[in-house]
Each structure stands twice: as structure tokens, then as C-alpha cells.
Length: 197
Image 1 (cartoon, rainbow, N blue to C red):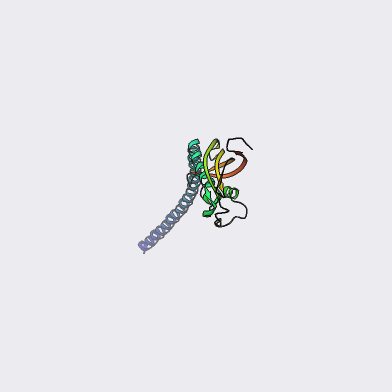
Image 2 (image 1 turned 90 degrees about the horizontal axis):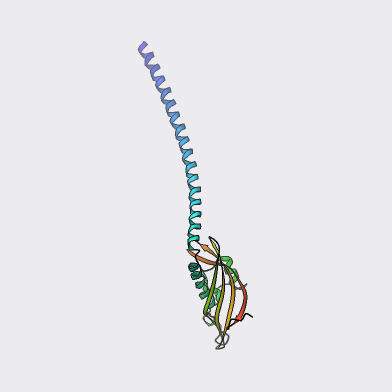
């Protein structure tokens, strides 16, 4: 009988010990899970911060005169080369080269969808002959350019050479890896001999 009582006591102590150990392990696992969640949260915040810094670094590396001018020239080619007889307008050829804000500045109010083709009698054809782009960096992700665009506008088969002066703000889009027109203001016009009107 004594042996049975000792065996029961040993078993009881074993169960209590096992229960205490299991409870300790469960608490430790819960603490580890909380620590892991906190580390994951911190890692996510650090990854976002790292991505932001990398985007700024890439923007800064791309905020070079050559790259900005190249992207602005693509915009100017799209904006100033169009033929209304083909259903083209200045704003129809600059998608992907402007921000939403920029598009609201280059597209006339109320112009929605695809424009209609003009008749040959009323068609306007514009072609960019030359452009002079003057670059000023503002920040890692912003730059300003002043543009002198020399163009020929043909109406009723009669060409007219003119010059347009533009003040353009561009912003860097890291996802597209290019500079987009964000703001454009017409500063003035000039005749073909560069005399400002």
C-alpha cells in the first residue's frame, strides 16, 4: 500500500510538473508569437522607409539634366505633333507622359473620350520643328523646365511658324522610371524670329 501511495504521489507530482512545464512553454510560445508580430510590424515599417529612401535615391540619380530633358522632349513631341484630320489633338498623344493633374492642364475642359476627325477644310496640323529646354532641379523628385517650342501650324494648307513659351513642372515617377509633366503654364508666344509677342 505504501508503494501505491508513493506511486500516486509521484504520478501527481509528475502531472503537476508536466502541467507547469506545459503552461510555461505555452506562455513562452505566446510571448514569442507577440515578439514575432512586433518584429514583423517593425520590419514592414522599415521596408516602407527603405522603399521611400530608395525611390528618393533613384529620383535623385535620375534628376539629371539629360534624363529630365529627354522625358520632357517625349512630352513635347506628343503635345506639338498632331493632325486633327486623323482625330489627334495635343492632349491625345501624351498619355503616360503626364500626371492626372498635368492631364487636367493640357486637356481642354469638357474634352472627353476620343476627339472627332476634322474635315480637310477645317483640319489643323501641328509639327514641332525644334525645342529649347532650360532645366532647373527643385528637389530629388521635382524639376522645372522652361521651354521654347518652335512649331509649324498648318490650316487650310497654309503653314505658319510660331513659338510657344512654356513653364513646366515635372515630377519623378519611380514606378515608370520617368519624369512626368505635373503642371504646365503658357508663358507666352513669339513669332518665328524669336521676338516675344
